[in-house]
Length: 293
Image (cartoon, rainbow, N blue to C red; front, side):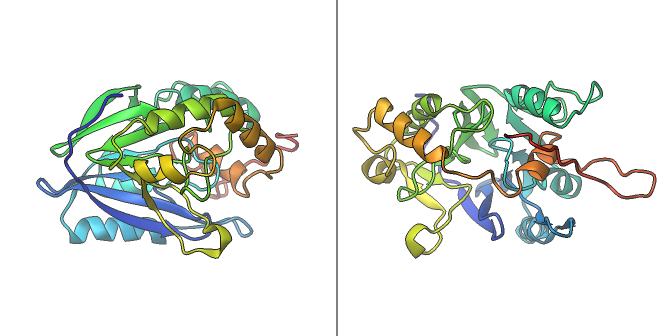
């Protein structure tokens, strides 16, 4: 497993309660350069209203601490919240990056939403497409992008210093792992990806994209490789792939689609850009009927 240096970034989390999403500002304390990971918009589905309160909190934090944004990173194409990446980039800069397998996701959902030939399916809506094992920097901090598919084909884990941002691949130990039944998902592949993460040093900090407080506990956003190996209810040490696949597929068969999957995928596959306004000045989202039957 490729690893980074032991440098410790400063991590600041932001929370969006409707989708239980955590976003992060990851800062190199020496240079005050930073990355934003898995940003979100505030979206009321019933009224179609978009607000920018959470994104503005991130902007305010960056301004108050005089940070320079180098990266705005998506760990994957989220199916449960809308990205604020373009809104943030227009105000604080930074390169927008995602895994190179975004093209696979765009091909699938370009057809679902009948996007036509004008929709580019090569990931060129993003500034940078990460490859597996690619090294990059956040200030002076060493970082590496690790392809961890299974939840979606384009999922990546980003290890920055001693901190790993796993997207939806892993949850807190008492919640297990992500579903693997989306198009292009695979429980078998997810097991292999999780074990790539668990090959990192035991003291690596792991940061969640979501937490739902199972059994009524308070929300948490941070765990470690050691804790995951010891206690994760789906993939703790000693769990076989066969056992995991059976458990994951049985659980996935009981799950409903995420409430915001249709608006989220439609926007996020365009790198967070909202649909162009029509001649009345209003943007519209499509609702494809029976798309996931």
